[in-house]
Length: 187
Image (cartoon, rainbow, N blue to C red; front, side, top):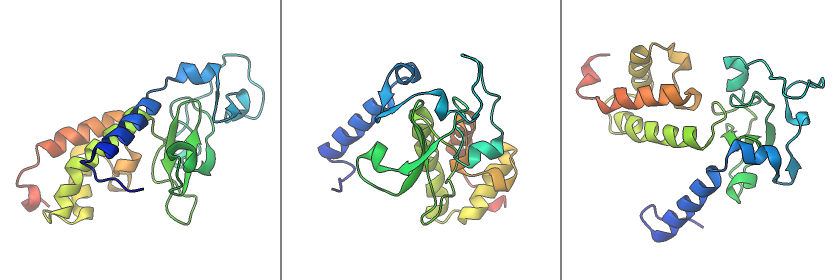
């Protein structure tokens, strides 16, 4: 069922999603979520680790595959998005304990970026809200807009994509893009 963005039904649906997204990591450590117990089996390492022993932080490359959660360092599960949206929009990589996920490119298992929790999902939406008008309104072609942003964020162009951003990078991008004026002549 489609909703108009300004409709009351849309607002109710968004409020319900936000409430679900606000569940804390601690709660998932104590309970089963989506019928799957949170256990050491969900971790990247197959060898049993001592209780409470932290896993080493994942590399950026591991995080960008969607197969590793940057929040808990655990392995994600490749599942249908109906598990989080109650309707299928395709497959996702899901970290159940952190309630973090990322979609995949249609027809593949290639992640669209890094696994994102509720805060990061909201930040990515905010980046798109200020970034997309730059290229959609014809100020710059999309690729050139990403080049402009990469230069200012001190990132290689191939690593400058909203799907790859962490929280800090999203905030930086929003700040840079909110100052956008007359940069079409800079590239």
